[in-house]
Length: 106
Image (cartoon, rainbow, N blue to C red; front, side, top):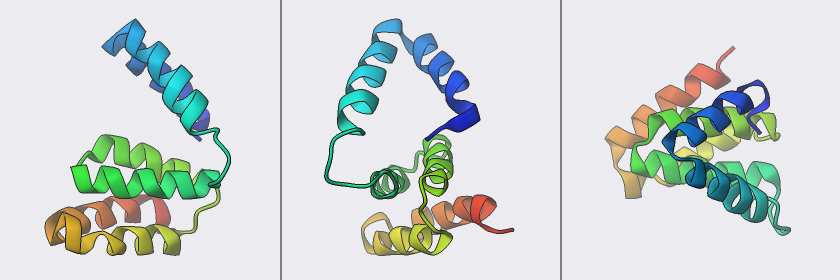
């Protein structure tokens, strides 16, 4: 999912706190993201929607890249973000779409 950014993500998690890094890597990435039922692209699109709603641009950027790496199309990313517009509001939705355009526009 993070490809060449994975080492940096590990460092950031460990810098936050070693126990936090172990928990995230073991539980969130290890158990949650590997469960059957949803594809990797679907999981990433759910993360994109949640992070857009929270206004977490740094994490959103990581998951936008991850969604694309896992096979989500630019159209699916746009549709995902537009589907939460009424919930997150136009300002957050437009900010998320602008960020997504950095990764989806050739």
